[in-house]
Image 1: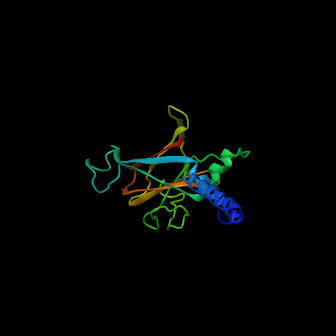
Image 2: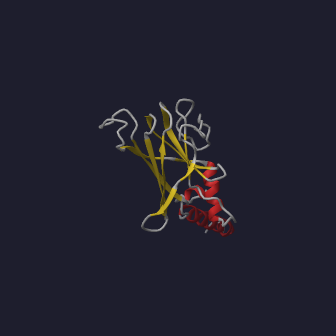
Image 3: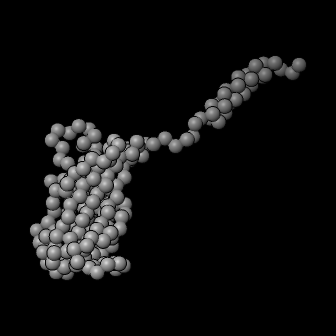
Length: 199
């Protein structure tokens, strides 16, 4: 037998190498969420109905008959995420996100972006489009609710295609873009936010 002392020193080296290899190959490499965004489920859609004119309308506009304009998902703003965090964290006196604001498409109402960098001008207190607290209604099941209101135009040629959901303090939860609508005096626009929390 050739030099048993060399074998004595080499065997522990290979044993350690073997254990390191086994450890490396048995690690669970599945993705683990490392961000709160990965673990909070939020979904919402906006349904829009109007007596105003829009491309593709199937009935005559301005005859007091609401026609379904469409439904689409929305962009959850970073400020909305902060609001959810405050509510989940039990912040005292939290301000509910139940106010609906309309964007002025004749000035600036671009597609909502999460950081709110899009061009956006609210209507303000003109033409019947002032921000208003919507009607809150709980739907069946846990964590499902709607906030809705009907706007009535008090001017002609009111253009809108964006709505925001916010609290009384003006902090935005989310924004939604829909098909451009042209409202004439007395035309109505029903905005219904459906919100649910996934789990």
